[in-house]
Length: 123
Image (cartoon, rainbow, N blue to C red):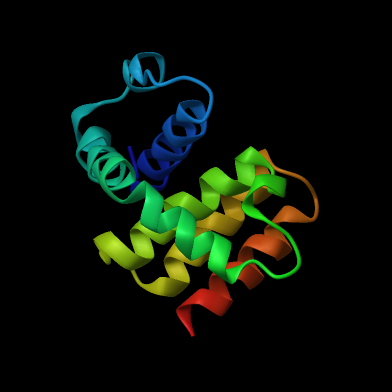
């Protein structure tokens, strides 16, 4: 599987953790290569979640983190982990992958929001 698939698996796991603290269902069908990258992301999620939320909250303009769609929040959390903690991929790739996840899983307005939000953080 490609890194894109591993990233998508991490996104689904983060999203599911907003509602349920177990990741068994999401990770049970993944192969070992996916799990290595996915587990790096999930370790950062567990370790730095409060800092990540603060980064998101402090960069929102005109509304609070509680008003974000949970899908968009999970995408932003994933992207911030990659941008600020893992730093394994170019910023442009991380932002593009986040936008693609938004196109696939969120509203029509979400890709533009995700792109603008992440672009403002990496400046």
